[in-house]
Length: 420
Image (cartoon, rainbow, N blue to C red; front, side):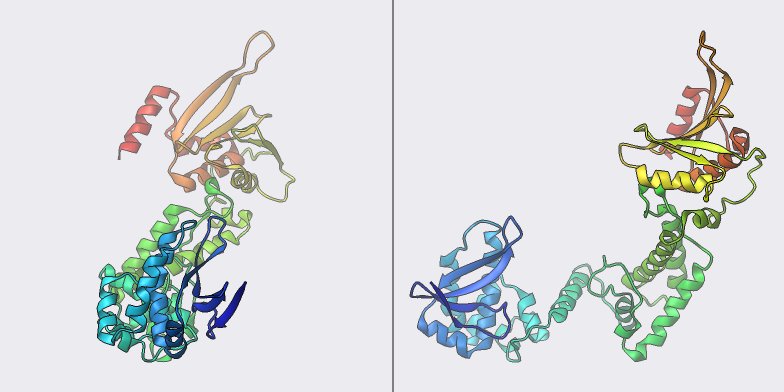
């Protein structure tokens, strides 16, 4: 039988219960192996209950000190009740000076105290009792998050000025650097917003006209890492040049914002438009535009394209790649059966083979093929070659060489490139 004896307004602050006639402090912390919240209890006395009821600060300090013991219990071990009980009197009954000394020797959870209104300056000086004079029952989770973000930055030596902090708030990355940046002008203090917008304008001007294309080799929504790096480098350089007072965190969040927005625009663009935007609608020198092609992957899956399709051959091929590409599926082929030619893309090796039928098989002998290899420079190189083949066949690939028919020569060229 369990009855609630005392509880505060915030559901997470430990409650006092009576279980089988015994007073216990009960708190939730951590999770079990099934990700369900864990609950811990340990015995207290009536005198300790009286302090917990009357003194919010001591109640919160006790909670802060017990939480590391709950963390140590992990997903399945029992709480060290002896260690928990040993904390009761030194926290609930000792003088403030003795409590401060205790907290210099034990592990404790700062975030709980900060969330409940602790004076951060006093907390950092080790005056935990004085820091809790303004404690509140209602927590402010954002305050604790900001405190931890500032501590993480301080640990790596990053000190933010007012403009740096404002820029991070504008992109939504003040609390978590891994958060996808967004434009949040309302999060910035109004006097600082014009300065923030000047920095953003510098970045926008620097990357005007640049784009981040898609990389279907890594999935339907993946983008070209090289394009991303190129834009990031361009924006970083421009912002540092125009605003040398900014710290690295502020500069990085601005370039991250520009790159993320460019990547989002690319993902929301139909593959057909993406092809044209990447500059693959140019004349590649081939005159015999394809009327029908078949696409296959390394798993034997095939897709047909015909000229009457609403999309270009290149667009449909890259959609096929985006759907099928995987770590164990990195070889894709485009074949024109009527013309007896095709290309095979080797994503794992950044290379391509063009295959031309020299002589058809006649039942008494096998067909004869000419196979030539070339190195490919990233996804943009693959896009150029695929579009060229779709527009003009193997002949249109001639100027995109060099092409090597000797396998040993090709392997030497590949090793030289990889060694650079």
